[in-house]
Image 1 (tube, rainbow, N blue to C red):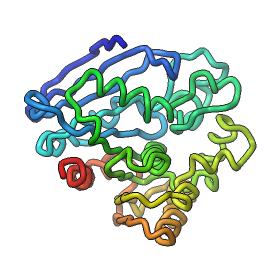
Image 2 (cartoon, helix red, strand yellow):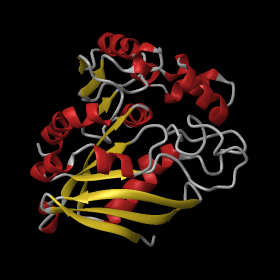
Image 3 (cartoon, rainbow, N blue to C red):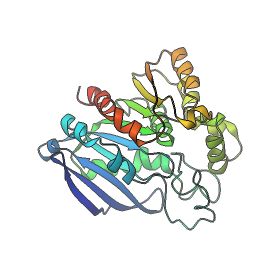
Image 4 (cartoon, helix red, strand yellow):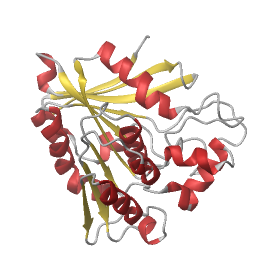
Length: 282
């Protein structure tokens, strides 16, 4: 599969690159960012996947989070895909900030007219890792995932639906129980239809209840002054309760004074990189 390099910039001794390719799953051109730490010049490194939130592209994380120094130090290849298919000529795809373009929700849509292109779950868990493994110096056996908001939801479900695939998972302000939040219900109705049992297969709080219990150590940071938290969109308490019941270790940190944005992410990103490095470099 041909990759077209869009940009390359030296950063903390490594290279921050952006590529474009024709996606088989999404049937459109997709961009993803990849950071190659200095260690990647001499050997294979672990791969850490970042999933961004609503309205984001592959650019938000690489320009705003300040993750490069920690990734360079720990020798991690960090991959950040776009958040949805683009320019698929679907009627209404650009009408809403929280559905359609920039809002793939990391599900495989089953409803018309979305099901042909909106297959972000398959893209993130299958197509993209195959592409990365084939074209970059990564160790396919050492892979982890993290994300923010809608992408935090994505990271949690990818880890919970694929026991053993990811060495570790973490999230910033994830949508923890989307079947009970307005954002989640809108997206799931559009992409998956009205059968709510289908929704539960993409809901971290429901998935954790049937998780078979292979080792998974979850780190979640949540800003206390996050407007989406107070609005009842994120519902972390429901997820924590489900994890506690299943005895799945989760470190949940409620951070005083922080909101939902990238200043919050930048503050704690090094902790998350360290969390993943502990498992990826073990």
